[in-house]
Image 1 (cartoon, helix red, strand yellow):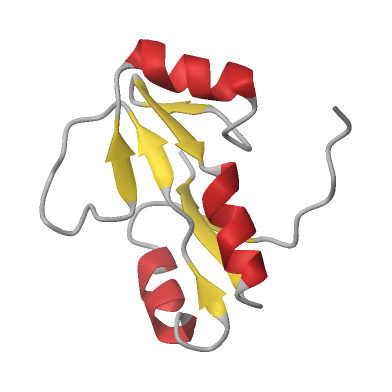
Image 2 (cartoon, helix red, strand yellow; image 1 turned 90 degrees about the vertical axis):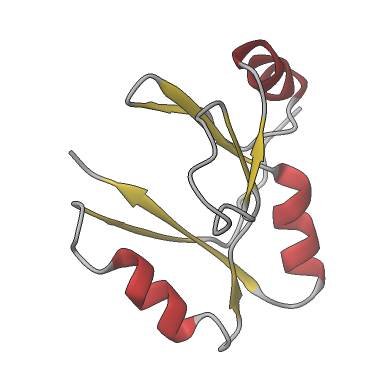
Amino acid sequence: MKASPIPFVLVSGRSGAGKTTLIENIYNHGFRRPVSYTTRKKRSNKDEEYIFVTKAEILELYDRGDLINLDICYNNYYGISRESIDLILEDGLIPIKEIHLF
């Protein structure tokens, strides 16, 4: 399967750099966060953009092509849902996601 380019905005920076604030300020202006899968523990009610799974489940999702990426941060796995990207694009919006730099 040949990968197609996906229009996507990625905001990166160190902790406290303002990534989340930036995204929250432009969120209602044509951008939407895609759903991510993760193996980490749920932290709060603000975790609605995550689906919590086991390591085996996230690896299977990645192997099937259901995730556009697979990253490890602090021994936890993260992957962005391909389906959520497709739904955002179908709505005429641009996916936007933040990542932490070390």
